[in-house]
Each structure stands twice: as structure tokens, then as C-alpha cells.
Image (cartoon, rainbow, N blue to C red; front, side):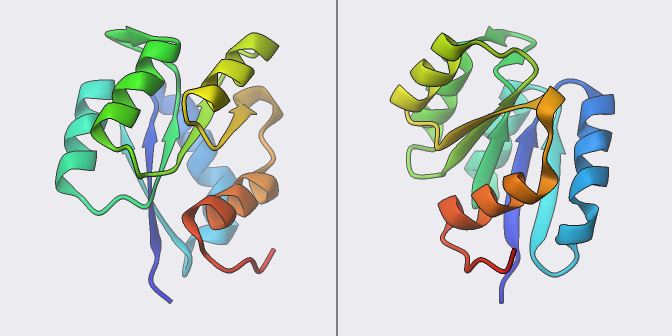
Length: 129
């Protein structure tokens, strides 16, 4: 099976490291996680690379909140986007879903197994978890 290339657009290097560490047990044969620090870098990566799923922080340098998701969906309308942010509010989760996000995860409640399950489900990969 081909690896799913997941793009994490995350401005906090410590959060990116924690994410990679949490996903490590699932990565070897299933996922290739690439990371960009800014929205602009992430949008360039989506335009030039085969990205199967985007893991998106909504609060990045130069873009904040739902505008971040809107910009990603403009550039990659068919790529599944999972919002992965440190700010949780019911209204933000609901509006993210209305704008086309597949699901909404809070960084503070990171559950790698459920995140991987979402990767598989939204990218159309068979589930083994």
C-alpha cells in the first residue's frame, strides 16, 4: 500500500515535534508526515507536492481563524483538511466543519489513535486500527 502523505501546517515547532512523536507508532508503513511552519509555505507545498491530507492549525503567522481554513480550501478544494488547533470553542468547530473541514481536533486532547483513524477514514485508506 502507498503511504499517505500528510501535511501538517503548524507554526509551533514544539507542537510539531509532539505530533510526530505521538504518530510515530503509526507512521512507518502508513504515513509520511511533512511539516510547514507558515500558511504560505503550506500552500506552496500543496501546490507542488502530492498531499493526501492536510492537518491544519487555524492560528498561523499572517492568517488567523477561519480565514486560514478558507485559504487552504481555495488552493486545495479536494484535499481533506483536519483542523488541529490549540483553541477550542464550539462555534469554531462548527464553522470549521461548515467551511469544509473533515473534523476538528484540539491539540490539548491529542489522541493519536483517533487522529490516525481520521486520517484513514477521510483519505480513503483501509482502517487497521
